[in-house]
Length: 264
Image (cartoon, rainbow, N blue to C red; front, side):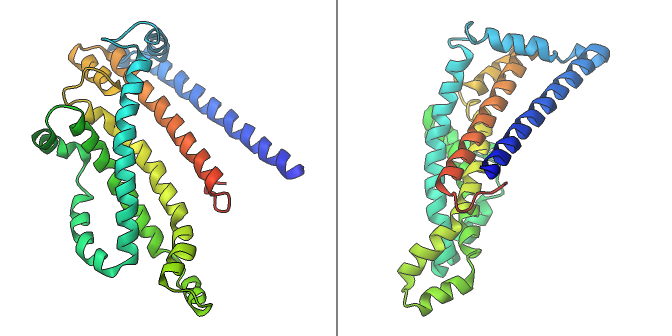
């Protein structure tokens, strides 16, 4: 009972500290805009948040802000799921099978440092200007991160645990399923959490490719129209949704991996 009370108290403490930090940031932002020349090129938080709330009922282009968010989320969902699935499979295979590692790791290490935005010209050539090119950019963003973490998770498995399992009569398949996979799950979830944030951030670059909706489109159109407010509305929307996605991923991890929860 006492431990439960302490956990709740810590939770409330984190929420309180987060609220204070956000409030202080908004105050500093408003002060800088109000009392310096930065206000000539940047709108304050009051004006930005007012525009954000108005965009909930007043369309920007053909959709309200929540419509643009849903469009972006649908693109992120497809690219993230594909990239994460392929990344988990390739990372685990490279970590477990030396032949797979020898064949695929050199190619992967060449692809990994390339930023997703550098793939835009090729994605247009390969997939055209429609949705597949956007899915591809988000796929690359998630794939590289998840693959790295899955591979590192397999390599980080304690050799003594695998040796003990083999001494008890386990074959390679049993060692893999009962020791390796459970041990690398926390690494995979860490990669998924980073990847979902990177995929959501990549949506701006993805929606630069002939989009007519989405949060990235809101920012690009704000740039074309020299509307700082619209740009900031898109940026704030991306930040809020990204934060919510991170919280959801941590909640899923805590639910599925109660035996190994990071960040306590």
